[in-house]
Length: 541
Image (cartoon, rainbow, N blue to C red):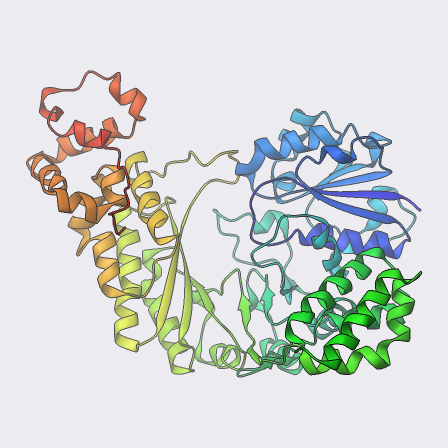
């Protein structure tokens, strides 16, 4: 039995590390002992591990990831048994080796499809293994989307867009293993989940979409499907019956049964329930006790556990390609409990195709759409406004809800987010960030809100982008004090060239700006860029 350590750096992320979850499944199948940690966990530094895997994510998390790798490489019994994989490691292999002193053999590139590359005698396609959800309870960090099915119907994408890393990470498009098998395995091991997140990069490239949709419908995700949580009791009892005797399961079941006490009303049944739980605390073998008392405990658990119905949803989380949408494949997608339908709108040149895709979705009864909008790439600032406004107009016309998610482009070869697109400037990017900070990154369907946040037209939008950051974020406050109007008076008398010069000047940090020799033509407007909003109890923002 080997001691295996799985490590995810301490960056913030919405989804759990699927690669590590599959690696955990593999090593448990080999009879190994597995521990999962997030970040630098110094409480485990007193022992050496037989093998350590460190996952990586985005290239802009480079520094924290390298620090993590360098820490854990001192805790492995033999450095040849430290493996680094994932997105960043694949895209920046040479940089990782340079910063950590590792060898090429330590880097797992792309998909982990053959366990033998780590020196094992097995040849298992780890990428096809089920996820081990148990490891998520080993850490305090809670993933916002952690309690879902995570799966793939397909891998890869044929488009090979210049801004995308998928051609490097998953170079070949192919249909994966049967989705029903994936979901049934999760059900058997960890219990059913309410919602399904599919991480396909281009599902509409599948040669037989109808067959895949059939599988999803048969798995319980057709339109209108609902979910009743069976509860942890059933899941753990079934695992006990299969011979699983981990202390983790004992803790999980004990916490669940203890929490269920709040639902059991006073009286004889409650007394019996509490007596059974008290006896469990002193039992020599918790699992055996639970199996022996199942006949007495199950009726109480079944009677008082939650039986509420919850609507299910399918989320093609990476989005579908508007250029490939047609009446036929939209009809297939509409058979699913799809919520939301995510469609990318990365280029204003695709506006007609995008609008056509939205209209088809509406025609087939899909009323909630989530929209990825790439900016700071080859687009102009005006393009972003036009794409966002396009959604607002579609919402009004069709009576649907489109939630836009502007996503700032950053080249995958950079280790930070400092990139500025050819048609953008730092001031505009900071202004978009300020607006999205207020909206929590989402541009919702509301018409009045959009035109207030982004301007009534492109001219006002560009003026808003030129505003001081605090004046953007605390719009109502500064409009109330009259300072916004004062700023506008000074700004509007500037020539086009003066405005460009001002934007370059105020792209500097406050410290840098204070050290600048300010031209006379900007002396009245520059003080507004030093405004620092101080919130008090009377503010409504």
